[in-house]
Amino acid sequence: MKNRDLLIGFATGVAATFVVKELVDRNQKLYPADEVLKQVKNSFKEEGPIDGSWIYMKTEPYTQHAITTDVYKGGITRHRDDELEQFEFMADAFTGAVVEVSKV
Image 1: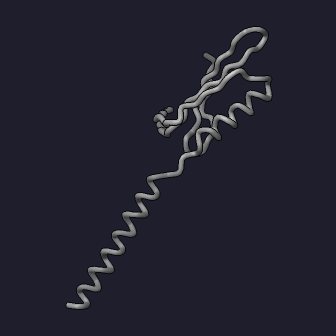
Image 2: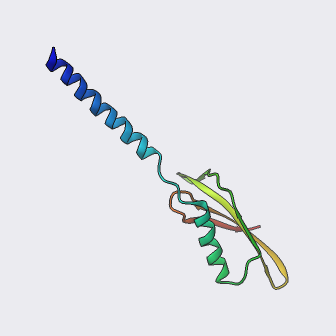
Image 3: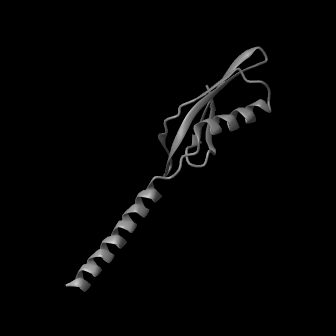
């Protein structure tokens, strides 16, 4: 009976380890939204001053063709040649890489 109890305990430990590992792997670390905004602002500042910027801190799903990922959405406002320009961007929430920029 004691060997049986030992085997049950070992199997339970292995199963628990597998479940915890799966949960940790699924809960990937998100890239900080404020860092994404800082990088995008710095890129736009290379072309001139900006007037304002924003980013949603909550991620949204984004699908392009067969690829789906979570993204942050944000925007940049600036004046160029006395004209207001507004841009919206989407950045991958796990890597911080900008996946799309569009002029509004």
